[in-house]
Amino acid sequence: MMGSRQAAAILVALAVCASQASAALFSENFNDGLAGSRWSVVSQQDVTGSNPPDGNVNLAFDYSILGLANPSGGDTIGGYIRTNLTNQPGDEGESYSIYPNGQSFSGNFFVQMDMIVYNESLGGQTEFGMAGVFLDNANPVSPYQNGAKGGPLALEYSGDGFTTDDLFVFKEGTASTNGAMSLGSYDNVPTGTIPGFETGVIGSRGPAPAATAVKGSWVKVRIESTGTQVKFLLNGTVVNTYDNSGGHYTAGNILISSVDPFNSVSTQASGVIVDNIVVGVPEPAAGVLAVAALGMLPIARRRER
Image (cartoon, rainbow, N blue to C red):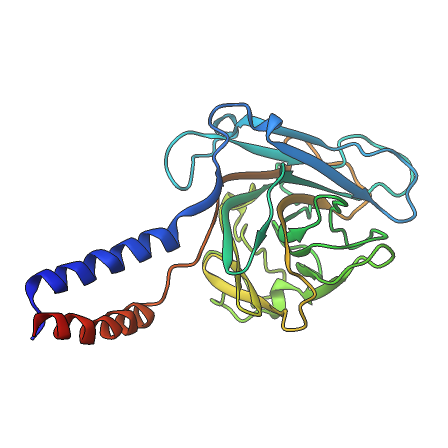
């Protein structure tokens, strides 16, 4: 029989393993107002455009002035990314991305954040929020469906519907291909599939399903890289999985973006707000811990004898 001391030792060892597995590799809550020194910005415009970028990034923004509360509790200082702020002639759609300086992640990891695509106008701005992984720090690219180049692996979602392409995934982009692939409209996603999203009806609004929510809703955005699979989740639901068994992606930085693919000015305060960013290692499943415990039993029994 296993003694109480051995059993206690096993429990402590498992607790240490679980604690280490869930430890954060990187985190950002923007609280100190100095995140601007820790993050960099990259943008991309329409491939046919000739105007300079006209977006804006504020990494010490108090979003309570927009009537928003922190969805995870705590303060209301976050990152604020905006695009298309001026009425430039011709093509002016663009993508703005932020990424933490000097970070790179590989193997099994996840990145999770609270994101809201804030739309001030009742008519909808059809702007997108985006998160990605495997950005090349030496050659950063802000993914964009109307851009000339790609690179990172990313998921983009519309903040209020109003388009036939509410969801995009960017994969295996190059210096001459943007790697964009449309996942279609919210209208074609079965009702109730994504918690907090209106889907499955004509004119589905995604995370802004009603007139009272026209300004948008907070979404828990998560990307999980485990083994050869990279999963994209919105509010806990997997909306796309990338097969990395070919080893196209090995390591890289995270990115967070605001995208406006249409040639129209973003009105008033429209943009993407992000907070509570965490990069960590997925915790082992309960079954894995159980197997680990069973593996330690024979040793404990031999010592008891």
